Length: 205
Image 1 (cartoon, one colour):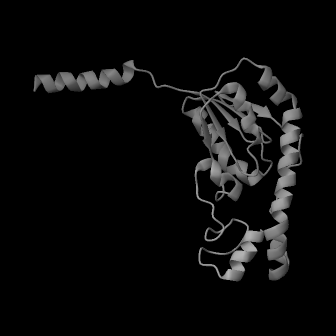
Image 2 (spheres, rainbow, N blue to C red):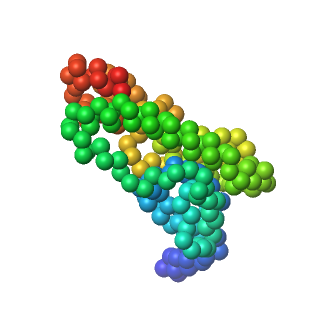
């Protein structure tokens, strides 16, 4: 009985003796869509509340300072995406054509624009010149993973976080199968049970 009590006391004391291990985390969130940041930024802020030292590169800096949370603001370097595109206002056939085929191209243009603007910005140039180190990088690989170029400097483990289904061009990096013959794509409204015509349309998209 005494041995059990001693062991219990030891377990309680040991929890106070060993400190919680916290990390320096860099969030690379260059996408300009507000809906994505409404999901990811609260997660990053929660990490800082739990004791981690968090640095976030994004277009949406915090409205007020937070402990252990630092903003590297890209605000003003690229147009912000604040609204959902009103494709559903068109008739169903035209809406499908516009969204399925042209939205992919548009996303590519948006990614090129915000990537180039980010690397021209002072905050990214200063980050590249700094002597900072990070234990972990959190990155959203949505339309582009261009910001992972910074990891050539920091050499940190990377965690990908996404607010949507995985897009086709991200699958290979994560080891996911991406065979258009039977795997649906985000840009089409087909399930995995597709007709020959549906598969042809999806492949073209």
